[in-house]
Image (spheres, rainbow, N blue to C red):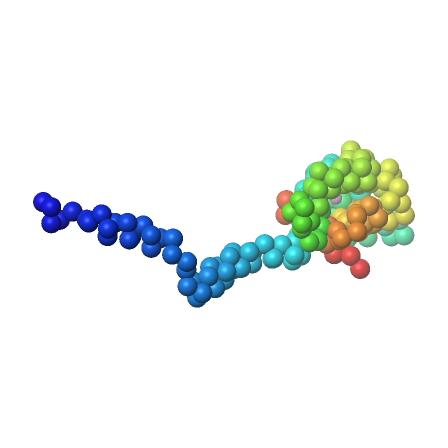
Length: 182
Ligand code: NI
């Protein structure tokens, strides 16, 4: 049995080896691994897109007063109905920017939601777009023009470093417009 046990001297030698200073090439390797592991953090300097979705209901009609009844009906169909009709709009507001180094956020999404609610939703929700909405006065209340109007409502209220990228507005689940600014 005695010839299979590890001599005390050899055992101590193994432990000592664990604390032997590592050769230069090994330090270089470790430095490279540490550097490589930091690379993903550097990528947060890149542009990121952030979207907040909001919802509103509104009434409108599409009607050109310079046209005959027949032409309005031919072009706009049921959307030219004199007594209005409504939609359940889904609004996607996308901003872009570089993540803040202290928060990792492009923009505080709660603030974005509050801005959308204050400057858009409060003005259009449960309203008649042709009659009640100041920022659509004198315009055809198409979804296209509504998206442009929403863009103009929001853009003065975004902080430096946060850019409005897209207003995407669903009029129905199968019809939407996108506006990316002029
Ligand atoms: Ni409509």
